[in-house]
Amino acid sequence: MDVIKIIGVGLVSLIIIIILKQYKPDFAIYISILAGAIILLLVMDKLSSIISLLSSIQNKANINNQFLVILLKITGIAFLTEYASSICKDAGESAIATKIDLGGKVLIIAISIPIIQALLELIIRIMP
Image (cartoon, rainbow, N blue to C red):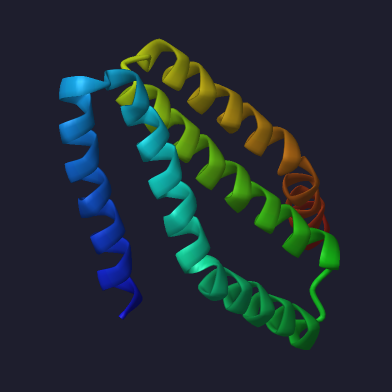
């Protein structure tokens, strides 16, 4: 029951943050970061099994390895920018959070160019 562990870490962290904000508001953000790191560690097994599954599907379907690597990078960028953006919002810095989101989106588009190019080339070959 991994979800119960994740929810437990989240709720315990929330209670600690609420208590800390009364006495030491500066430390609340550290608890938030620590909780995120613990939750990430809890889901690492699932992430590695997902990557293994995608790799085996990629091998069976004879899909270019470059595309799987790009998709994993895009997913990683999306997760990391969302995490960093959430931390900034928790700290009351929504302007910085918005810039992190924008930067992540630009990076995702930049990294996805080879996939877009391959799709466009395939469409051009199919069309008469």
